Amino acid sequence: MKVFLLLSFVMVSAFISLNAQDNPLEFTNTVKRIYVGPAAGINLTGNGGSFSSLSGEANCPIFSAGNAPGFYVGLTAEYMLGEDANSNSSIIARLLYDNMPIFFRVDGENKPVQDANGQVLDSKTNHEIQITYPMITTEIMYKLNPFGNLFGFTVGPSFGIPIGGNQQERLNLIEPESGQFVPVPGEDPSKYTNFQRTYIYYDGVIPNANPFRLALKVGAHLEISQGKMLIVPNVNYNFGITSVNSKDSWRINALQAGVDVRFAL
Image (cartoon, rainbow, N blue to C red; front, side, top):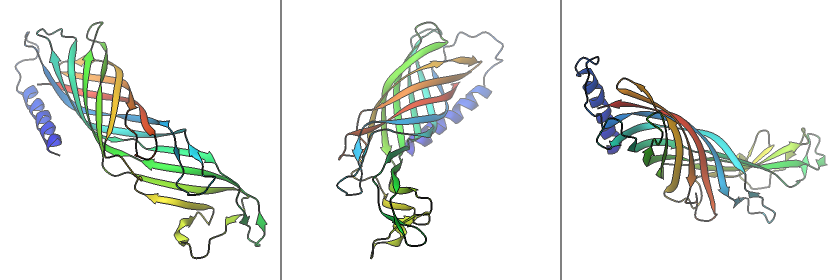
């Protein structure tokens, strides 16, 4: 929170500084070394590795292919390296609220079900896992524009602290359309939803969740100069190094596309 307040103060200072400048049409050779502003974009998440179901059954499925859309929003600051106005490298820092959900679905085993008349039927099912994974993320990136000041690349570490997160695993009845799961006597009835066509194995915090996420982030960007403002559309790949939990070897990765807007101080 203190870092958020500090960057917010810097942003306000940037706007005040811009308004206090002399005539912008007058030539100046002052090097603008610091740029600050907001950043926002989308996360298209995927996973590396696999993990097993929490159902506790002997034939529980293995989840190995998942994806979901998410987003990020926050603040960014850039410090230009070099002594002249044509410097082509810098250090970029970001402080973000980063949401990286992920969704899995695999075919399930057949279970006996009953229709409205009490007739027991064969069934077709699937397993689904929905994971929410919000974080506060800090990034330190090295930027290089090797071909001038328009196009360039960034690389650096990303460090996230989960601020919650939930995992729900459920078994869905696909066929027959008239069927329902047969509740187990004495079991919590809230586990059966969707007119008893969905059975919830688990709904709660991510079990054995790691308290942080370390990732390597690489990307490319364009820099569009508008006076003392830079508009920077960018695409990055965020590769998870640490696993999400300590039980299974699986990581969340993300293809990220967004825009930074930075103002010269």
